[in-house]
Length: 266
Image (cartoon, rainbow, N blue to C red):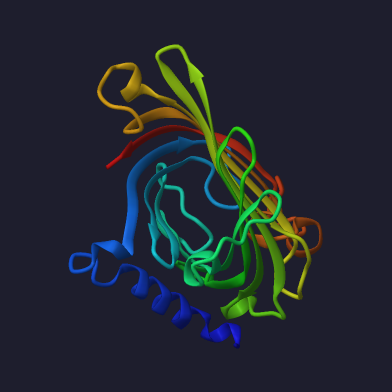
């Protein structure tokens, strides 16, 4: 399958997972949605101060799982990005097909709980479209609520179109009881391990550290969180400032910042 056809496969997979929800509830096993507000400073490449509103959806289906998020980003004051915009958006659609579920068979070996076909479509304003596909694994690691590990072949589009690179993406969640409530540490890491002509190897580490305020106030657990999101991104957007940008961005493209966070689940 050519990677250029991947958006159609992702759309078809997401459609299969999401279709006939009302008529056939057995397709959908569970779902969760959330809205997150973030305020942070010291961002690189883009304007320094940003406010972000993020919608997230995650669900489990009879054939696999689905994760979707969309960021709406506002730059403070009169600041604009390289395209001259004072705001932008970015999102990802990530369906995974479970071979264990599809073949009604346990594919458990050591810490591996399931083997999946993982796909992601990245989209947004300007030249950001990318298509990813590869094997995924759900792992049973003591103490973690979940731990997944996906290996992608990544193909960028538009002016960045190249031969493709490989990306390793772990995602996790870990809960620590604290007094009357819990602290949840969850997040992901995208590690692009090699280069092509237009996209440089980079590492994006993005955990959230959240306190379950709703549980502490007896409003209901896993509904209202406050905390911080840490964001470390070496060679942000796959831009190597040493070889590509030179003096255009004097403070470089390595991002190291944190944002205040409020998150509501529904």
